[in-house]
Length: 117
Length: 116
Figure 1 (cartoon, each protein chain N blue to C red):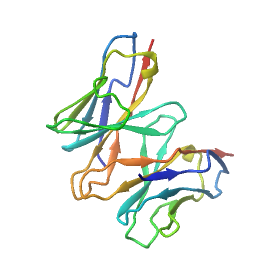
Figure 2 (figure 1 turned 30 degrees about the vertical axis):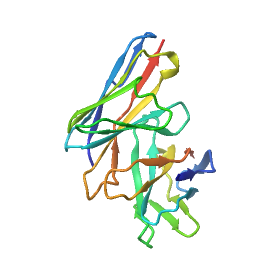
Figure 3 (figure 1 turned 45 degrees about the vertical axis):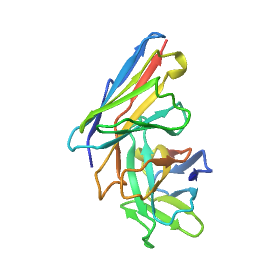
Figure 4 (figure 1 turned 135 degrees about the vertical axis):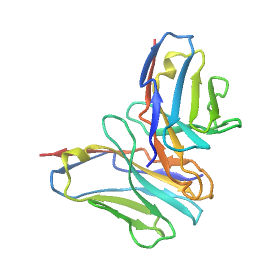
């Protein structure tokens, strides 16, 4: 399977600051990546679909101006949490998708734990 | 919209025994994939097994097998010869086959404990 990294693995920031999380596909080119958020003891909730070279597609209820996604290359997508608040504290996970014909396979990064004080 | 339901928040199994985790889903599609993912305490999501809806044969991966009942929209996971390392959260997930990248819909998860 694909190898996916995320950086940082954890981050603590002050309320009102912005935080950038990187998701890298290490061994293949990914045209599509997904960003998820997971609260403690809950399931993964899809936030947005990141497409290389185009705007991300956000799920209903996710503020696009707050969670900025940039998929500038086939190996890197970034999620920036702008003006973070304590309620943004969560575990953020990215996944990459194999290109067609295996477009149904997703491989996940190790996640980033964000704590906003 | 597709939904995935896992009715067992927690399950427990003794080491070396067999346990079955339940999953049901709701969809009007005929072409889709179903998955079981494992999330251990490290929180790294690991694919355990996948099933293509067009295949009648149940998928198996070593000690892991599924019981896929398409008409009943049921997709249970059986873990045989349970090991301590199987302790984790298990998520059932659905993916509509669109030929291009499509999102996963996850169930709420089942926490599996493995006891000695």
